[in-house]
Length: 103
Image (cartoon, rainbow, N blue to C red; front, side):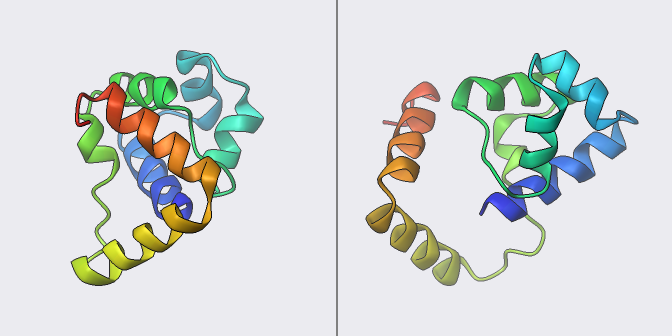
C-alpha cells in the first residue's frame, strides 16, 4: 500500500511540475521524509495527507486512486490482513478514517 501510495504521489506531483523539495516545503516536512513517502518506505500522518491533497489541489480520495488496482477482492484481502497483523497501521488507519468523518 505504501509503495502504491508513493507512486501515486509521484505522478500527481510531477503533473503539478513540483520537485520533491518544493512539495516538502509546502507541506512543512523535511525533504528526506517526503522522499521516503514517495519511495514507499513510510506513510504520511493523516494531517499530512490533508496538506498533500491541498498542495496538489486534489481530493484526498484521488491520492488513493491507484491505476494498477483492478482486483477489489485481492486488495481488500491484503488490507484486512495488514490491519489484523500491524497495530501501528491499524491505529493510523483509524485516525485517518476518523479525521475524514468516515467512522
